Length: 413
Image (tube, rainbow, N blue to C red; front, top):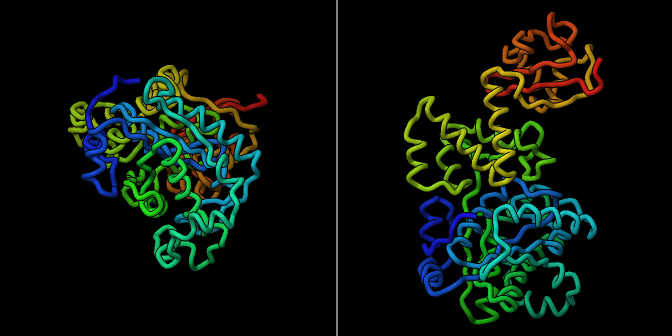
């Protein structure tokens, strides 16, 4: 990990563009200057891996730790049993306790890539199942629920997308549960700040307000920028689904290539949010708006991949990416598929993750953006055997100018 700094984390996070909203910003800034602040972020283990949407909060926590402050990670073993309704159009799938526990163990491995679990301000992982699952509900309502206004809750942005389809009472309790998490952490560990993505603002604010009402002491809330594309959609959607932090779900090469291909307008922002590169170097890397920006994209992809998967994996991904751009097949990333000479190109594209569906693959073919070993595919019904000179057991699929995938037949023939 990088050397610690005594810089106020508010200055650092502001400089790098993380912060979206805070409560009592002047008092929060002052508290960081008076001694070590304990802060936390919660993560519901509803999947068996963190994804790129979590990356920003983890990086922000890492910056704060390097400034000398203490992070607490709350794994939502209890809240994941309910499901956060924030900005969701449908109710989340209910998970078993066993599934939640298995997912939480996977999360712990990924957090260790960014945070230190040693030293005076070592990161601490706790599970809110320890205090949520055995609650007496009537006592909880009398002790915590009395401090929440239903009218105020119904105006929260996080619930608005659910109001038309119907918000279950189960989900309505989620804000109380997350607020109670903050209260427990404040009472047990002296945690005074909750952080999270900006879509969690209402839930985080509720926890800080609960502490002020019940404990009559200061508590703070701070949210961070969401990773968005220029059109406002969340960054991290690929042809195969989400961009996961687990190397099995999203291999290092795919992770690297995602950021190697990031849109020009987002390169500087991603360098600030996803790497520890200093400000002067980032400004120098992004000073150009022409093809020289490719060096910045390559650096972004390398640094983010190295942080998550290690330098060796990042170097391998970099070599594979350069090979794809240069046409050098020997170092190009390869995947094995269950294909035969009769396999349709559009089917192969979907299996290889080069297209989300057959319809999308067809549009790419009809637009002239698909070729196999340099031979353009001109027909939607084209099969491998129809392309003269192509070895159906080993070939390179090209989609546009940026996607190049070496494909091997799993069985051989």
